[in-house]
Length: 133
Image 1 (cartoon, rainbow, N blue to C red):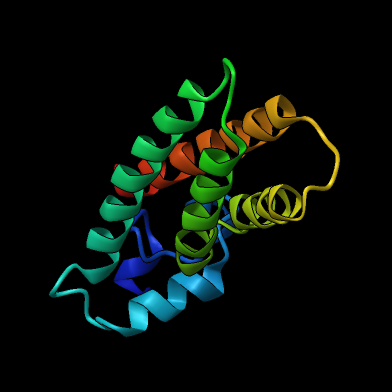
Image 2 (cartoon, rainbow, N blue to C red):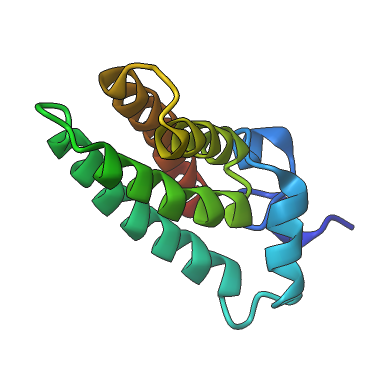
């Protein structure tokens, strides 16, 4: 008998279903609502999708004459929320960009913005696929 959450639900842990998201992080979220009656995982993913979409718009606005403090703030905010849902590539990119900007390490603010946008768009596509599967 198969687990009802293993086929196309946001709680699935197969690599195809998680789109590169960490199945362990998704599993921790699923443990909060083991039978799925309260839709905890779905609600968390919807909240992440909404927040990420808003943050990506904010990052895109920083492309022209970007403000390093704004970009570092967005990276900081996205770092923990991304890690909590298992979007580890985005969380890592955010951590690295935030560290570089906060320490004043030389680099390209434009490159940082593009890196975060690319990682964020990838995570957004994955979340949308999990929500609409």
